[in-house]
Image (cartoon, rainbow, N blue to C red; front, side, top):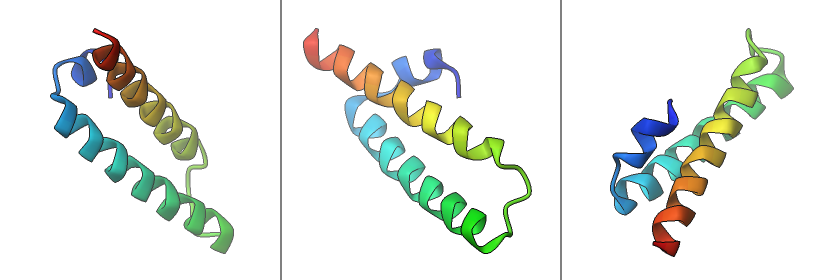
Length: 63
């Protein structure tokens, strides 16, 4: 997702999105461990999305 999409979300939506992304990251790591992951770059992309969402949450918290 783009950073602009995270900025438009509310705090509750961002918290839900972070939880969803963490679940997705867990599943991707599980697939990697079992050798079923076809594209390892997905893990990096999900980690970056989590970081973007947390950054926007922090910015909204400080404002």
